[in-house]
Amino acid sequence: HKIWLAMLAGCGLSYWMAAPQIALASAAAFIVAESFDWAVFTFTRRPLADRVLLSSLISGPVDSTVFLIGAGFFGWWGLLAMSLSKLIAAVLLWSLMRRPVVA
Image (tube, rainbow, N blue to C red; front, side, top):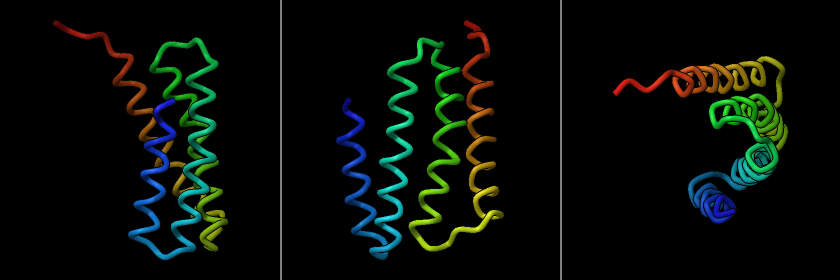
């Protein structure tokens, strides 16, 4: 549950470094998406690599949608680009995590 402290710190940095509307959109997206991540990591009993992928499949598009709407920049192409970039990174990380460790 230490993630909530890191989230608050991240939200504070956003307010310090960005315009208020962008900071608020970022904070809202961060809180909503991290809530989904927390639920996936807390309640699923899958291996870590699978939980990383599952949480990214859920929270990536949610994060992008909430941010774009909150920032006043929502567009389907923007949502697609943001979501796909996060999902590609998640699949790459998942594939690396599933590789056997060679000693």
